[in-house]
Amino acid sequence: MDVFSRTFLPAAAQTGLAVQTVSRHMPVFRQCVGSGDATILVARCSRPDRAATGEYLLLLTHRRLVVTQQTRVWHRLRLHLNTELRELSNVTWSPDPRNQSVMLAATAIDGVRERFVIHTPHPKQVWHLDTLLHHAFRTRLRPTTERVVATVTAASAVASGPRRVPAR
Image 1 (cartoon, rainbow, N blue to C red):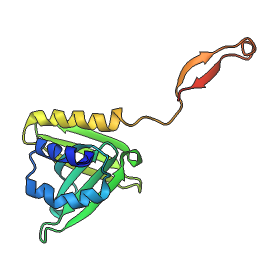
Image 2 (image 1 turned 45 degrees about the vertical axis):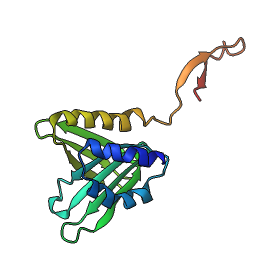
Image 3 (image 1 turned 135 degrees about the vertical axis):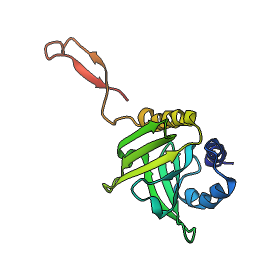
Image 4 (image 1 turned 90 degrees about the horizontal axis):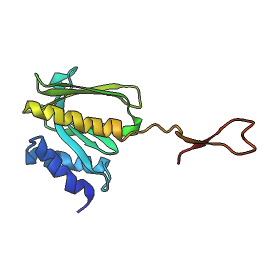
């Protein structure tokens, strides 16, 4: 069993998703996510600007964000968003324990601002989602700029000043 399969079902169970819902969306997720990518979050969500368009299911892994949509009338599945985390910009989320929800917003690579509301059955899960999102978007994504870890001076470089050594 690969990493995705081992981590997908426990992540879906944490948010209380039905097995039928998870099974229906699984083929679409399989096409988008590699077998070595671990699942962080699987949750039902909605779009605040388009409430009547159907039901959405959000999958967050260490590398990708995938959102599928199921239409209301025919219950057809379609891929709404499939992007790598590093391609997202201006990612924000705001936990709201009173409404038992977390609002997630991000700008995709094509410039479209996507907004999703993730509802939770219990107020404590709001803070758990906040921790998961922080782990995925703040601690995993590092800027690609060089960091200065030390300055090295040599006898010949003393006159010209310290030399910066980039970290690798």
